[in-house]
Image (cartoon, rainbow, N blue to C red; front, side, top):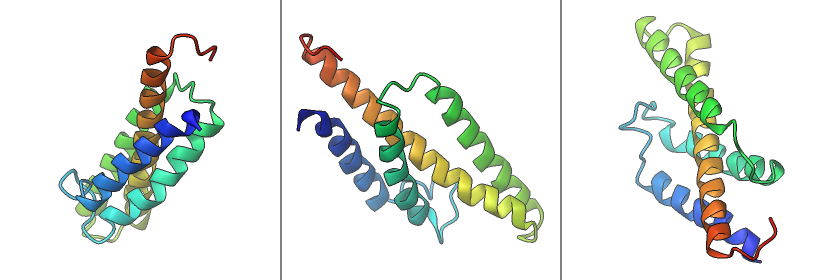
Length: 122
């Protein structure tokens, strides 16, 4: 049961961020700012679990997600909402950002739990 605690803490923190609608002031579209994090958070928990919480290439994934999101946002706005691909990149980029944030939080809380219990073999 202790191995589920970091994921639970990350999920609760993401729920608080979704409730505060943190994505809107950071650049998400107002209509789907919470929806993208609601989709991305469970994906991040699943990915962190499948990866065994050993997420070393995560900074690259975070950088890619943020770059994709920003590119989609600027191109969609520049096209006066006519570039559908840019709109989809913006939307999917925010889902990826939510997933990587949740996976990062889970990995961080897992690492903190391991440092508090040094006798744990993994």
